[in-house]
Image (tube, rainbow, N blue to C red):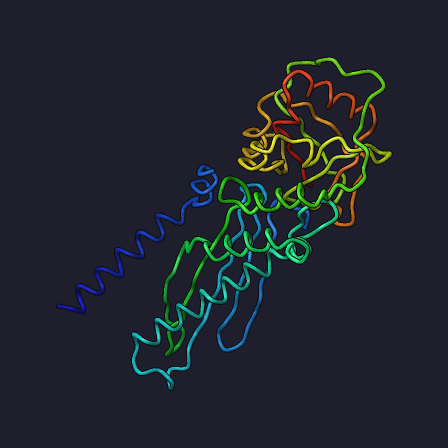
Length: 304
């Protein structure tokens, strides 16, 4: 009887885990290659392995850990399954942190640089990783030994997102440096009924970043952390990424009538910033003058 009850509890738990896993990032965001998806695999030994995914379009990072155990060192099957599960989750958290370290924060910095330079950002980031959702946990058979599989994830945007400490870091440390802010000769007047600004960078290998920057072709700042309303930045991040104007991530961000600007090049050591022409910069500020599109972070980037 106890075995049957235990099996029923495990079955219900697994069903709940799978239901919770579906589009889990949308819930967390609401609470608050140059592709939109970057996948890395980490083959291990003895059945241990991991895989990580950064999905810029949906705005989340996931890591999957897998682990087996040496049955000769286990007292029973229950202990073996628990150890396999815990080993898989330990690997998943480690790889989540490792993947995050390489993510671009700004056009010139990555997360590992941010953590090295800023203790506040380091503490906040570690807290987010430690609080990552356990989206899925299960134990399969791998020969005679159990194989633990654990999937954990964090969101990029929203109140629980990693972009919050990244934005605060950019403001505290003035990561834009001494770049002068672009000021057109004549103050821009409102132009069109635009609902957002889209930078079409499909002609370049733009690297997505949490705090992207837009500069003119002569190096003057058009868009960046210091020019965005802090509440908008912390709630939704600075930009969306997608591969098409019809991508839901793009339309949700910039609406149905965005001003589309062709990128003129890449900017920064991480190739995570974009250059636009002076004429297009004037157009962006003109659209911003009417609806505060840049200030409210209604900005998106198209990737190839």
